[in-house]
Figure (cartoon, rainbow, N blue to C red):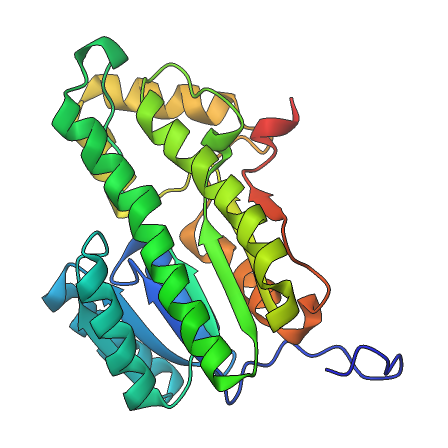
Length: 269
C-alpha cells in the first residue's frame, strides 16, 4: 500500500504472500497459520513435531488450497534455523510474514526450578524467537520487499499469574516484548514491521492436558482462571485469527513496535 494514497481501500488479503509460522503444528500456532492461509497466504510450518506438522499442513492444503510446506526444526539450534529458512526461501521464493508461536512453559515454584529447566525455557522462548526473526528479516531485506514479523508474547509479560507459579516463563515473555520493540525500531528503515500478540488463557489442547492431569484440582484451577477474566471464559484458539491477519496485512501498514493483548480483559482489572 502506498502510504500517500488516502483513497486506497483497506485490504486484509494476504494473496501472494508467504507466511512462516513456528510452533504451527498445533494449538494457537496452528490456528493462526490457518487464519493466514484462509486469507490467501502460502504457509510454511516450522515445528519440532515432524509428523504433527505434516498433518497440520495437509489439513490446511485441503481447507484452503494454498501452497503449504512443513519443516521439522528445533528453534534453539541457530544453524538448523538458518538452514530451514534457506530451504523455505528457496521453495516459496520469498518470506513476507513470520509468526513465532513456538514456546514452552513449566509450572513450578521458583525455589524448585532447576538450572536446566530455567535455561531450557529461555532457550526456546527467547533465543528461539530471536534466531527465527533474525533469519526471516535477512530474507526480507535480501528481497527488498519488507514484511511483517509477529512475535507471540503473553499477558504474563505484564502480570503475575495466579494461583500457579511460572516465574521463568513470565520473564521470557517480557523479554520477547522488549525484543519486539527494539527490532521494530531497528528494522523500520527496511519496511519490516515487528509487532507482538499477547494471549491470555486459551482453551488449547496443551492447557486441557495440563488441567486434566490435575484431576479435581485442574477443574478448580480452570474455574479460578475463568473467574479472573471479565468475559468469564477462556479464549478459543480461533479467536486469534483475526488479530494475526490484521497485523500481517497491509491494513496494519503503520503498526509496529507495539502489541495486541488478547486476554478477554484479564489485564484490564
